[in-house]
Length: 403
Image (cartoon, rainbow, N blue to C red; front, side, top):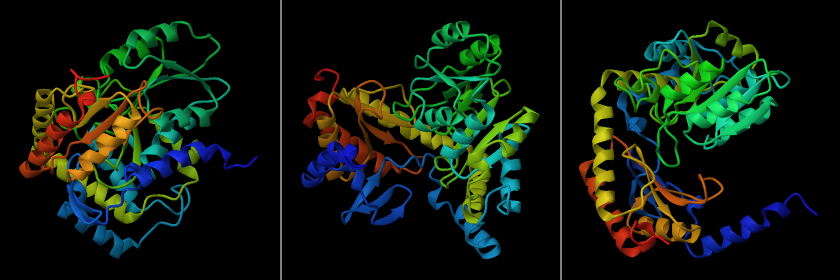
C-alpha cells in the first residue's frame, strides 16, 4: 500500500485526456495579451473563463499603484498580520472596503479561501456551536466547517424553507448558530434569495454569513453584491469576499457591523499564521476598488455583455443553468461530452472552464463561461460564433437534444 494508490484512477484519466489533447487542467497562458486575450499553444485565444468580471487586470491605475508599492514597501511582508505583516496599505484597504460596503469593520486575509476558512473556524466553537450551510457552498466553506470541528448541517440549495426546518429541529444544546450561503454561486451562476435567508436565520437567533466572492462589484446598484440588490446589506451579519475576481488581485476579506467581529484577528489561525498579502497586491486591489466605485459604467458594460451572450445561447437552444449572470454555464450529460466540448471551443480559439462531478452540483458536467466588462464587441462576436458552432456539433448540449 502507498500514499499514492488513491491517485491511480485520476492519473489514468488524466493520461488518457492528455494523449487525446483534451486535458483542461494543463492549459498554460503562454503570453497574456490583455484582460481578455492570451496565447495558448501559440494561438491567440479569447479568455472567457478567468473571473476577471470587471476587467481590472490591466487597469493602468491598478498597475501604477502596484509598482509604487513595490518601490516603496518591497516585494513582501515576510510575516503574518499579527506579527510584522500589517503595513499601512493593509489597514487603509480595510477601511476602504468597510466604507464601500457601509460596514463598521473589515479584516483582510491572504486569500478569499482563507477569509471563509478563517471566519468560520474563528467564530464557531467545536464544543458549543453549529454551522448550517447551503449544499452548493464552495469547498472553502466546507473546509472552514471541518476546521472548526463544530457540528455541520446541510440544507437544500437556495431553499429557505429547508433551512427553517433544520433550524427548528436543532438540539437546544447549541449556543451559537452560523448559517453560510453565497451571493452568486460560481458553478451555475444562480443567486441566493438572501432576504429570505436573513429572515429565517434571524428568526431562529442564528447569524448569517454571505460569501459574495463572485458577486462583489457585480450585483446591486453600487456593486455591493446580491445582499445590496435584495436590500439587506444592513441585516447580514458577516460579509466575505475575495480580491481575485472583480478586484483582479489576490487576497480576501470579512466585513461586519458587529464590533466583536474584530476579535477574529486573535481567534483565527488562517489569519494569525499566514503571511499577509504583499504590498503590491494590496495596492492594486485598492486601486481597482476605487476605479470600479467611481465608474459604474464598467459594471453596466459587464451586464450588457452577459445579457447579449445569454440571449444568443438561448437562441441556439443550449441547456443553460441559470438566468443571465456574469457566469453562464452550459450543461452536458456526461463528462466525456464536457471534455470533448471544451476541446472543441479551444479549437475555435475560445477558453472557458470545464467542470465535472463531484466538483459540480448534482451529477451535471458543464462548460462555464465567465463574462468580463473588458470583452470587446469583437470578443463577444467570437464567443457567439463559437457557441453557435458548439450547438450544431453537440446535440447533447441543446435542450432538444440532451440525453
